[in-house]
Amino acid sequence: MVVRRHGRVGAAIVAAVGLLVCGASLAGCSSGGAAADDARSGPGALETLRQSAATLVRAGSSRARTSMEMATGGTRVTIRGEGVYDYRERLGRLRVTLPLDPSGAEEHRPITELLAPGALFMKNRGAGVPADKWVRVDTTALSDGNLVTGGATDPYAAAELLRGVRQATYVGRTEVAGTPVRHYRGIADIGLAAQSASGDNKASLQAAAKGFATAEVPFDAYLDDQGRIRKIRHRFSFVNGRQKTAVAVASTTLLYAFGAPADVRLPDTKDIYAGKIAAQ
Image (cartoon, rainbow, N blue to C red; front, top):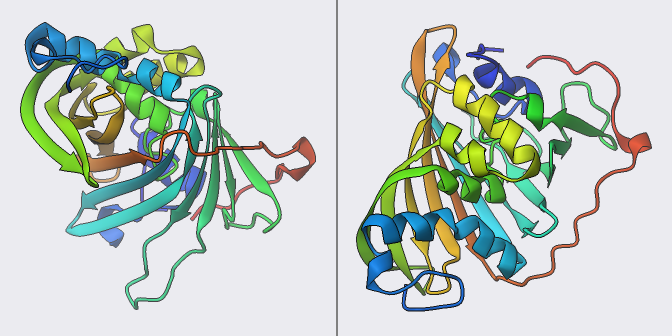
């Protein structure tokens, strides 16, 4: 394993999932609240962004695509995910596709991830875990708050980060996958977001505020005319303990097909692996 912990962030990425290779080894007026001109800048923009998580809850569910990029030591790694999310139950399912090895062959089988309040479940984890078993990770104990551990940021946690927006600028109108959106750019504070986060996200974000190299997270957010996030990109920074240098992680989440069925069932206790997980 080549990543070490700052708190436990760096190691958590590899130890919990075995995903990343880093270090030397490699809005018109609407019911959703995206209101008129006063929502485009200043206090109006801040309020619109801070309410975007609640707007997703009202939307109910959606499909999601994720992308996480890490650049360190001259190596860039990209992990992609696709699935569904139920914002009311805070349950999601993603199929996470891992990077190719240098020869071009697939290095790992895709990992199925189930996202739940306070927990991350993974199947096809590898590292000695039987193929028919799930690995459960307590996300409230991760010092990155599961913002990067699973190779994908939980879509609802990504939205809740915007509860901590300190400053934001309205960039202008554009489109995401053919949908008209308003583009905002700004900085969110993880600690501030934790103060008004819901349930287990509160403890997770409180830990993340201490675990990252900085609690300030630059972002670009794209909201449709109902105030729903269509795309959000966060730029996280944590310290690679081996090299004592900051590692940049860019996490992008695309949300679409709102109202799509999102029937996510968590595994039974008997299907969760209780043995020792080998380091990778």
